[in-house]
Image 1 (cartoon, one colour):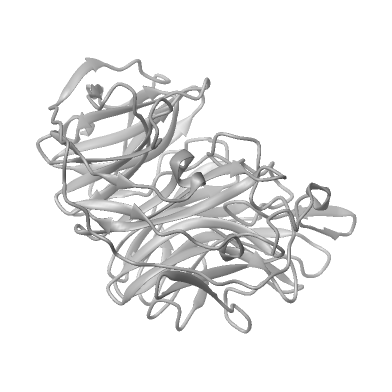
Image 2: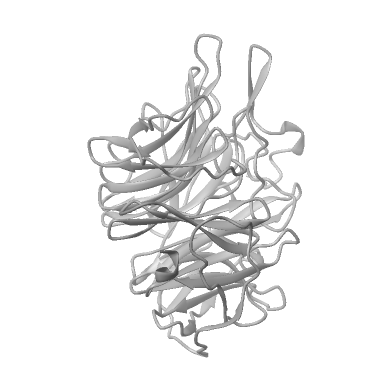
Length: 437
């Protein structure tokens, strides 16, 4: 299929309910209550901005490379500018040294350390991958790109189980400047692109790609695709040889219907299963209501069930989650304020007494960080970042760096945060967990 099979004139998939447009597309089921957030890719293309129809092959293969050209740096070097003044402890935020031409994009826990997905505009292979150890030292993970778009890709999401790594990157391109997705696989010794046909994630019917998940029962990629009944379905791609193959969502909890439009914003592992965090837009009885919801499978793409999170009002959304097996902490919004829930195998309950933090519901919320019974949530609020800490005792609210929090991680007693400034430049900061009270 030609890559220009879809024209820009289709626009974003919409439904009208009593004259009200309901939007859903990139990154989540975007409801009438908000303006959809553009992908964090440099370029105007929106991969869900075009409704398409098509057939999908797909891919995966793990290829190991020999580690080479390593450099190492240690520790923080400077104080951060801080965000809004809030009550609570005053943590010391320090900039983390990474190669000066690399802009941090994503953080992923990987065993005792973490992976920093970066972007180096001046290099031939612009996506970069760094491994940061618990002591703060960093090592570059070699990448090999094959297709033209892979050389230009920005990371959408990276998954790791401590050794294996799978990733998805994207860059706007083609006749209509839609996002062209690239898939990558390997280990801490090296990661290579696994090229895919255009129709794997593009063409008629394509929605968006959320990112990869590594479960104990195998890998997957989560995203969305045009539904047979209504709107976009949540979608799962599984590896078949060196191709990622989209699985049918028909008849499962991932399917949108005339009464409920589903949409996910993030995906994570629950052991052998997957947890998708997002929202369900209910269109019954002449009313529109968006509830925060999660979808979880029993084993990779089998046994899906939707759980509507309690106390999510008329406009709620789950954005991210941290899971330890079947027990998860979910972060999201209710009515424009940050909300947290606990999810077990049998129940979902709101976490009480979370400080009220008003924030833009279209902004990202990094996945909760969990240390024992303590929950740490990094949130964008106004011009800067605030950090909520509690669950094991009274909640505290602390100042963070200036910018929007796009990713966070908890490694070696340190909280790491990527803060993206309004101009688009991003900086990696960290503070000691003990500073949060």
